Length: 429
Image (cartoon, rainbow, N blue to C red; front, side):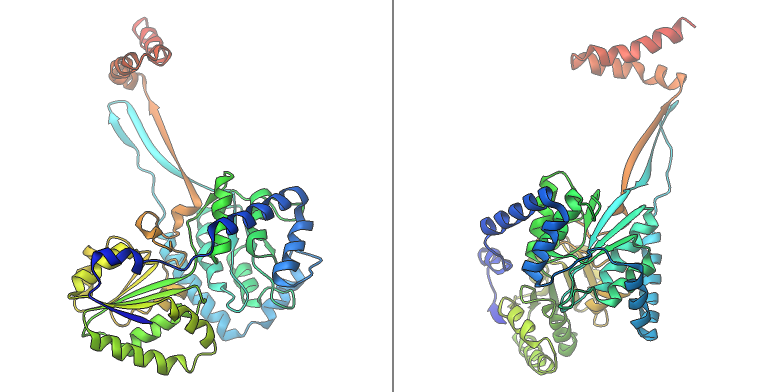
């Protein structure tokens, strides 16, 4: 984890770079797999599962028996923990329901907006060495609250060809309607086109590595909606003298362990804080089972020492982190200066892990600087907003001349006539 002292704004672009793969090669791979799956359906899905995951699978769909077996394997204490998290996530996302409000913009002219659930959504759940069953809660719970009828889950199989039991348990608990043991680009392609086994979805959700992100973006080019660009995980911590270096180190390591392509950034005004955090990282890292993954992530991570915390906040806004921790004095009064971040954690005791699991906020967040123009997943992600309007006879009389004048000025006479013919009929009784 390299340290930079007082980097000037000209260096900020370089310091904000995330790890990437060769885009041209990646896009060609994605396109090739999509084309194959569009033509050959489940046979191609199984072929790529065998190629990428080394697993030969007969049945992509997860059976009821497999789900019941998974539920029986989950320890009671873990079930209780998942339930607590589910309750908090449900409380927070239920609060986001919008109550329609009718507005009378002109006398006799009423306008309002209502939400309608997206009918079929696909959720991608990363698996492998870190099966993210918490992501099932983050996506399926708001989908259910929104009223989505079909929730399709895809997750990569483990070396034995199975999905982690905790993923299946969380899916069953939250009302996922169909589950499939397929991951990677092939899962995204299958949900984009639909196959003889996997349904076509209306919108795709879920984080993943750069291959999954590229696949989702390609699906978007084909006309399918996606939640947001969510690639490798990242965290930026702003720390001053009130921070606990051991806390800061633990937070940085918690994100570094997601994968070798994750990135963590420490921003401070003190080289002494960097030294203390670095020492804590070394001692804590030695105890982690995913140490090799952490070390790879730390190679592309950095510590930045600025002349003030305010400058550090400015860099954070430039970087636009997925997760931002404010371990600084008077942190709550500093949030007005935060412009770009996926989710913010305020104070020494607000560890990022709380948002990842159980505080209630959503952990599916924009990465790679997309927090400058994307929000994290919320209830709104699972609905469409439809506007309604109703004009009474009095309303069309009050607004009619305005519409006629504007339509005539745009030389759209049929638009004008749609009003004029109504006004004439009203005048003639």
